[in-house]
Amino acid sequence: MKIGSPEREVSVSNTTDHRYGPAPLVSGRGPVSEALRHALRQAPHELPADLGEHLDPADALTDEDLQLTLFLCYELHYRGLAGVDDEWEWEPSLLALRARAERLFEAAVRELVGPLPAVLPGAVPAALLDVVAADAGPSLAGYLQRRATLAQFREFAAHRSVYHLREADPHTWALPRLGGPAKAALVEIQMDEYGNGRLDRMHAELFRVTLGRLGLDTSYGAHLDVVPAITLATNNLMSLFGLHRRLRGAVLGHLAAYEMTSSLPNRRYGNGLRRLGFDEVATRFYDEHVEADAVHEQIAAYDLCGGLTLVEPALTADVLFGAAAALAVDRLFAAHLLDNWSADRTSLRTPAPAAVLPAASALSAAA
Image 1 (cartoon, one colour):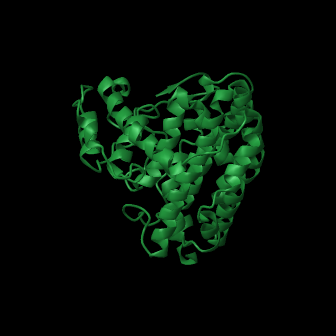
Image 2 (image 1 turned 60 degrees about the vertical axis):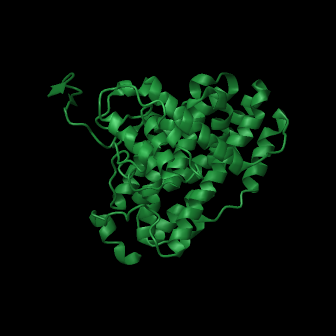
Image 3 (image 1 turned 90 degrees about the horizontal axis):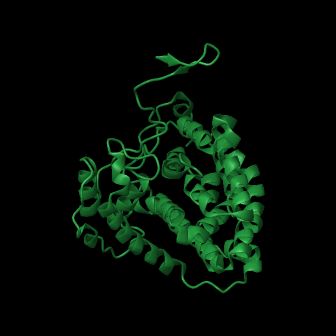
């Protein structure tokens, strides 16, 4: 069926375009996530009151059951889950389960970050630069630039697809919670992330092209079932910060850390793909970030976080915590990939499928 004027007709289909969601309702990874999955397949109803009590991991950051439980709860606020009634989003018993998982997760993140120095609001941009400069994580970008095989680069893309196919959305939750200079700065950054209203320039769409060139499934959430807990944790951290007004300073600090540590790594990712024989279409996502994030890092440090803390100085510590948390969890993510690759193991829960597109298949010898 087509609707609209002869000058602009729009095709309408009853078939969901899985490039844009919803995410698949994947299998559980423990008693709580499996019970949640089973419940979500039914009409909204009250979950057992003690379900969250079964979440008591030794390490919340790498616990598969907790991180998948949290991710499924959060995804109801994004694109939703396939076959799941949207009414689940605000089911009180599900929110109680989410709150239990969040408390465990946030406590683990705060322990990982540790104490941070006290900083005056006017010194926030300089303090953010210090946090970034002090980050001594393993160089995942350097490995991907110089040494990664095609199979390893495809794994990296599968991990990152969980975020990049909805890039900018977690940080956008902060917009209605801000006013003044911080709001204006966030709009400026996010407009670039969303391609200034052009679908073909949206960063999520640019990454979809890269996934396709690598011979990977480009649909939203396609690789959710194979990424491990630490990958889910990097995504859950953004959602935790973005969905809680009390953590609005942390979500801006998180975004600032991402922008301030993006330009050089993305240059290396693009060079890594070129080393493997890929063309400028495949590398455009990374190349775009080299230029854009060089500008964004200044806006994020001075106008976004600096602007927020001058208006709301009580949020200064939260901004620094958000930045430090982003870097700390990403260090664990990078270490997971590099440790597995150094041992000649896959970094995914199961190996990525073989490349199916000619563009990637023809390049497999380059690995």
